[in-house]
Image 1: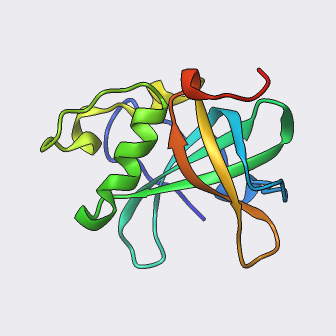
Image 2: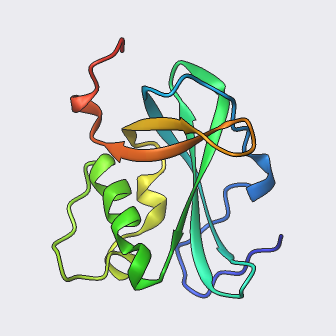
Length: 134
């Protein structure tokens, strides 16, 4: 999958094929945003793909797909809140956020089982709200 960037300052971190979703218990984990890539979806629409890696298992990385559609804006907003980035309601976070600045941020994630017998990210929350072992 090739990537093109229309805006300066964006970089390609790695191929979308490099994610390694590992089956984990359905619970909460601390994770780190490890990559960002701007790609075109299968329908030709622009989307951002972030790689999220578990802090206690660097071999487990999960994709976070953020499209630019209004009906999926809540997912991106929740991801930003997990990364401790505030975006005022009613604004367009895709225009106001440099996604490269999210790489390296720590956040909390909840994993759930998916239909491929692996785990997938179900939701995000700020790292200070994590109750498990650090």
